[in-house]
Image (cartoon, rainbow, N blue to C red; front, side, top):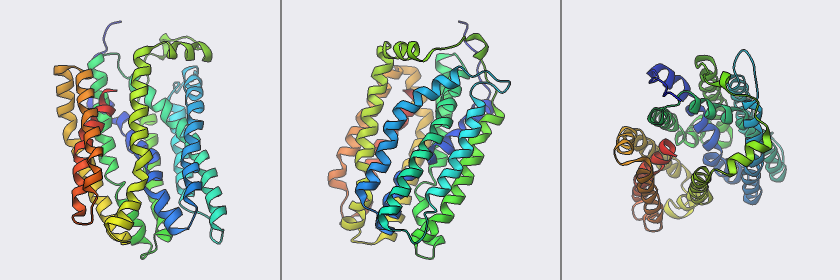
Length: 347
């Protein structure tokens, strides 16, 4: 197949806008669930753990189904854009509802409310994310241009991610010190951001390649996927990194609250905001460097080097989360940022 011509900055940016929605869809629950529902509303953390974990198992089933549905859709708007639009609208609605729990309910009832809403939310996320991710890969057939498209994604993702660390701070500020009240306004504000940035790729991008592809049956597609050893290796790497990060990241808020800051939730929220600024800022600054290195030494070596930095960074957390100097916890993030940027750009 003849390589596609280079894409315009406008087209790459239009698609990459969706990564701003994606960063909140995928990460905001991990930032706010335990501070709001456990510390604020006294929901059993075990229920919250199941509520955040079980929908991801559902994802393992719904994502391939959504991919097959999108692959086989034929419409005048394309096979990706209608789902991107609908998924963004549904995610925005569910996001606002998650952070507006009913008043007067018991902690147990609120826990089950959270679990139900998270299941609905991640189903909506699948409707958005799978077609949006596929559209980004289909914008070009050129090997190196695809890396540049993902570099745009990483930059926009990091820019959008700058707001993640502000969410708890804003909840405290907008609630007059009561983050349970303030998070309702935070939920609405960031739901609007998810909506706008999520629907723009559906409105501004134009699909290619779909006219060359026939109908795809589900089980042959699954068989083809699991026969691709390189793809499976990349998926295994992604799973290991995600498990290693997200299985322990939720503990950071408790370590900071009850050990590093001795119960000062405002101090924890502030350092979390600054740490997120540093992490996302490093991610933005390193994108052109990673893209250049990948082009010079190869994607494989660059990815291995980046993942090694992630391991070193998170291993150092044992010594650097300390009440003697809370700011030392910036060092693990500074080491992990380039490695995770490598992963998002290259994998």
